[in-house]
Image (cartoon, rainbow, N blue to C red):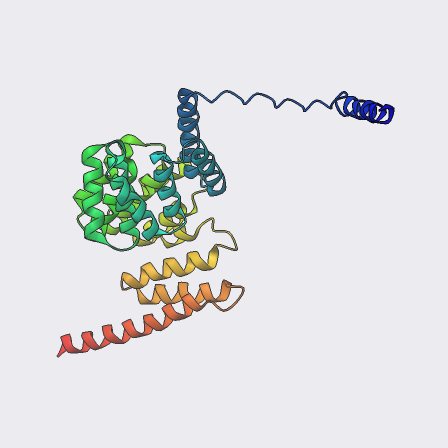
Length: 303
């Protein structure tokens, strides 16, 4: 009996030990409160605005990083999809851009911008009829879409519909007179029309906004060459620029039928090039063909 009692006492002691003080499990911190929808919308709007600013500055890496932040805030963001389409255009992934913008056409608040994006991508893919349709719809819905107006200007230039082209560029410039590319594009349209002095004024306007816009500076040289101001056309060209400038001036002279002048400038372009200038060499070959054709025509006319 005593053994049984002792055994029971031992069990009691063991039970008491087992029931001794236990380690407390650390309490989990409370979950953070959900971000209010109004704050999410504000963040999304701010990031979207920053995306377009980065795109305008040509900073695709920043635009892409901001786009990822927007999709984290709102995976269904239509603004994020529109921004993705714009990034595709900058990356020359035009068909992907078109696919994005076609889906966005069903979003009422993005309808005008979707037509603009699709039209600009169509233009780059030489889908001219589709481009015109989309771009015209874009400006009909929102006449502040300067890129759509600029695209229409380019479309009409290719068809030599000069008045429509000028109206399109003017409409773009009403919205963004701070864009040197618009002055340059309107100037080039005038250059193609043969209104060289007016073209030069537009190129100079572009350079006043952005003195480093090399394409506008080169276009001034082309316009001066068309006016026969060959010395002015090459004045101020750097050593690195000179071969290209000489070749371009020679090309204008060739188009004007001034073959001796053209030959002189092509030859100088070859001489001033640090390596073989294939472009100038090919132009010299074209020049000889044109000379031969001109000589044959002259003989026929004298008969």
